[in-house]
Each structure stands twice: as structure tokens, then as C-alpha cells.
Length: 487
Image 1 (cartoon, rainbow, N blue to C red):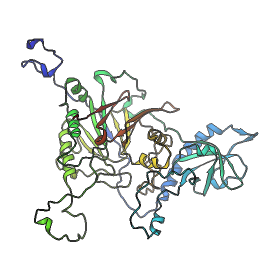
Image 2 (image 1 turned 30 degrees about the vertical axis):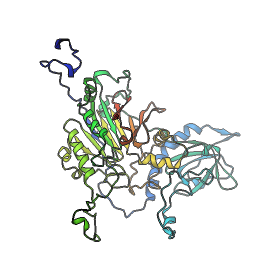
Image 3 (image 1 turned 180 degrees about the vertical axis):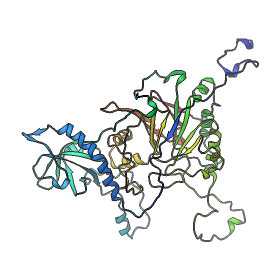
Image 4 (image 1 turned 30 degrees about the horizontal axis):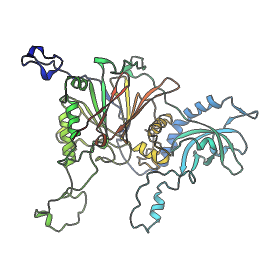
């Protein structure tokens, strides 16, 4: 077969005199919302204020749903009435009341118990679940007091500490509140964004998500880069795929439609001391106690150096948002603040242009029409411990219907003691809600009573699965790209 007879669609088989058509990456507008940035940090205040702020913010929304649901409700000819405070509930009187859930769970960690037990030889390992169907109790509290909730209706619901609800029922002779029905705030409104032109509806254009004009955002979590010589080949293949140097023209064309990469936490592996070469003279010296800070002799710079190299390879052609996770060099309490760009000597040259070190949780508007909300996974991992079962996708959906990204903060999930507002309360339903570092990929489209539409995406750990999730900015459809090395 002569060179002129080769297929023109395959760049690798083109005649030498033929030049492949150059591909340019599709560009989109990006606006990072600094809602979770902490300008000043002080830890002199108590954590109780955040619960009062949360209840004050969500109570009107819950009461509105309760009025629509129970406003004309009658039981045995008696009309159900609203009670302003938990302590105003009267025995045998049908009513409904709004408050914040508190889960009394014996298996839940308690710092006071830990301090009082001085006989521990070692710290007990963390529990996979706090759930105990026999001994767990559900409480409802507000600024006036607390009451225990009972009944089949409350037991069938999956509740965690910190979510704001309204319950309808009556007080029993034992002083408990027997619940007949329960309502939540529901999905928050979804008004058009500034660049949406008054239209929020996304129309599907088939499996390929809009053909040649498609725009995608790539979501990756759990790279777990260690910097060792046996670093995962999948990570390097991921870099080649994203910059269009992997496989043929079809994948190159697909990669050119990826407008942004979001790294959703745990990009670095867990901190491990740098292994010393015992044959060197310095290694044989007697170790001395350090006065403060880290021990420079055991500090391991390899993970950050390897990640810096990977970012530098991508940033010239692909914008990146880097979120911190629980294994990354950032503060532990939510909201985690951006990883300082000086950790990446080469990539910081792109800081403010294609490189953005962002917070966890993450909130941004992409292409003017699609709002992305995401976490690095700690929120759902903590909720998972409260509930029976393995339905993490359902847990993520409940956070939307509770209108709160991290309801278990600050009870069992560390957070900053906010005094003026609770930034984790959802003001608007995002178009895309992603959760990083989960066991496997899952997705669901959630539709609210007011026409709100939100694509929930659970991101698997790339180091374990080699999976990248592509989200179409118009249709909100998801596509999974799996990168594996055979043999």
C-alpha cells in the first residue's frame, strides 16, 4: 500500500509531507468563590456559637416546609400547631417543633472520657462505625433545651449530629417526644448565575455530551504521590493523557476539550520519615532532641518535589485547582486552607494564572453557568460512621437536602469555631457536587421540588483505581476514563 492510500484520520500513519491538524485546548471562564477562606484565625471562642448560627439560618427554611406539609393537618380532629421552643412542648399535645439533631452515641469519641482514662497503654484505634442500634439515642435541641426523640418515624430516618429538622408528634408520659413525621429544609434554591443568561436548564446532547463543542472538567482525587522510584506509572500516563500526548487522535481531541483539572485532596501520600542511609557518617551520629519544629534529618521532600514536577508539566496548557486533603500539608480543621504555593518551587511560577491553590470545601463557577461544590471526602467519611449501611451516595444527597456540607462539624469532625456565620450552610444548589477519596465511583442526578438539578459525583482514589471523572459542563453527564498498566 502506498503512502497516499493510508487513512488520513490516523496521524501516526500520515505520509511524511502531511502535517496533522493542530489542536487547541478549549478555554472557559473560572471564578473561585472565597467563601471558605479564613482571613483571620483566633481560637479564644467556644464552638457552641456555630450551632446557634446554623439553627438561626436554617430554621426559617425548615418551618416553611413544615407549614406547607402540616399547616392543615389534623389528627383525631385536633389541628397540629407549631411550638416555638423545644421546652414549650406539652404532654399529649399534637405539635411540631424545629431544632438541631444531636446523636447520643456511646461509641462516639469523647475527649473528656479520653482524658479521664489514664490507664490506656496506647491510644485505641479509631472505629469504623459509631452506629449502635441498641444504645444510640436521638435528641432535638435548641437554645432552650433538649428533648429525646422516639418512634418508628425517627428510627427509619438516617440522621447525624448537626442537621436541622422539624418533627411532628407529641410528648409521652416519660418526657420523650414520639415522632409521627419529619421534614428537612430540602434543596436550596438554584437561581441563574450571572453568566447563565437566565437559563439554568441543561439539555442532553447524547452520549458524547455535545459533540465537538463539548467542554469538560476533569476531577481526580487520591493521587497519593510518594516520590519514590517505583512511583505509579498510572500517574505519569495521566499526565500524558491530559496534555494530549497519549494514544491517538481521538483521545487527543477528547483531551483538548478538558478545560480544567480539579485535584480533590490527598495528592500527597501520608507523611513518612525520610529513610536515612546508615552507611553515611551523619547517620551514625547519636540523635539529639530537637528544640522545636520538624527534624530536618528525617523530613522527606520527595512527595512534594514529585507533585511539583507533575504540576509543572500540566500547568503550561491546563488550569489546575489544587485542594488539600487529610494527608496533605495543610491545617486539619475544616475549612482547610490552601496549600502554600512555596511548597511547589517550580509550579508557583504559574500561581494566579493557571495554578490555583484552593480551600477544602471548594466552591467555584466555571464557564459562567455551572457551579461546582466539592470536598476532599472527610465530610462523607465522618457521616458514614454515624449511619448503618454503605450507601455513601445517599449520604451525599442527604447533605444537600439538609442544606449543610458538613453537619457533623464540630462534634466529630474538626472545624474552625466560627462566631458570625456558618459557611457550611448551602445558600444555593450547585450544578455539580463532588466528594473525593471515596471507595468507588458513583454518580446520581438529584432533582428538587423547585426544579433544582444537581449532579452528585463520588470520586474514587486514583492511586487505587486509576480512574478520572470527566463532567460535561452543559449536560452534566459523567464519563470515566480508566488508566491502567497491564503486565
